[in-house]
Image 1 (tube, chains in turn orange, green):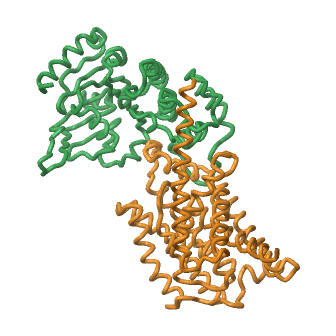
Image 2: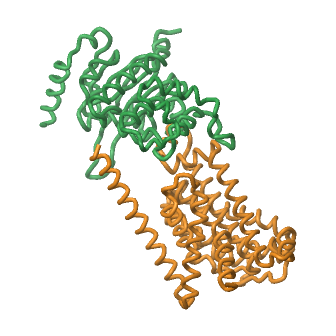
Image 3: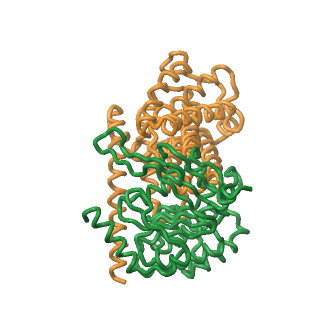
Length: 306
Length: 268
């Protein structure tokens, strides 16, 4: 039972922290219809920036904001490459992802892993520390992750209801419509990529603070993981129209982490982890396509019956 | 004021010595417009007909800024717009496309689509996206369509029929004050009944807003029935141009005969 609770703790905690990233990718992939691969670089960017700042004695909450801003800058570069220099979306992402590897090395002063063991983080000081020192113990991390994820989710949902948010959704839905409204869709794309990558970096920042270390190579496979979460979330909850895309992305990520943890517990060697991540993504992609085809067939059948 | 200036003031659109060559320097080089000139008077409803490849849609694309011109000048309401980008021109030009899904956002609700169009020209920052107080206004707008859409404000536009979407697109394109309305074969993808409905609606909107309208169509009946000026395009030139009295007396038969002449020239 204790083992089970321990695993549940890990799944929920990591699911929600990575869930922030899933929401970021939801913005770029679902709302903006842009397959953004710079995520693999902006996730460790957030982690490394957080570790470097905390090592330098910066307040861990301020570090969160700086990391978000750093992610925004990375996203804006991807956006500029695509919008201003007309480089394809995939290529812009790959270019930024690759360049960010060097940036991350500069941030960590050429260290592959930057440890912030026993330094103040949002989990060890303030509210987090208070909860950790109470009877909650490690559940305090889950609650902290939950609080941050929910705050981000609410802010994001509120943003999507503003005029700017509405326009962002319109860009993903029909670019020509946005042009007809006298607005430049390129600028909105850059804003969307900034928000998306900002959230991804924030996710990396929170994870680094929880694990008390940042790994410059932790970005590999993040895009695959986040995309899979978004697709799984939609496949599982897509029918119930009540759930928002942001909620679906986070729950998708929790389900995804659950599958990974289960596989590890069943004795899968960690070297197969990335292969498993790709495998799950393929299943999610094919599954959601089959599901869409089936529902499309049902619509046609229903129409024929009329 | 000289008479020349006066006549310039009466013009909504002018094309002056416009040239457009596609694929220049390649074997596929096509000179579509060679010193093309056109004047459209303010307040007119102009129908444009012509066979495929005659340059009708390209003319609209040049006017709206979807395509750049090689040389020459285009003005709208006396202002040189040649250097303006497409989204900048959209501030005073409304356009309804042939494709019913082009003029609306399929993933957004009717309410959200209308709210976006309602804010055209305004700022798009962190204000609330949908103004609840405008709801009644949107309802009255939709009631004019007689399609029952006023009760479906919350549904996604992609679940509407082509005719409904095109009617909505027309509403959206004309929601804010316009100098020019462009109808780009906007009934071509609709069934005959929906096409009639959308065309009647178009007439109603154009009269109400008193906006200069340029309609490209393959439907010779619509071209003959609607508007006060009609011209036919052929190989990048205006080959037949009638207005007011002459326009009223024209029949579909005459138009078809004209069309056949051109087609024979083209070897069709």
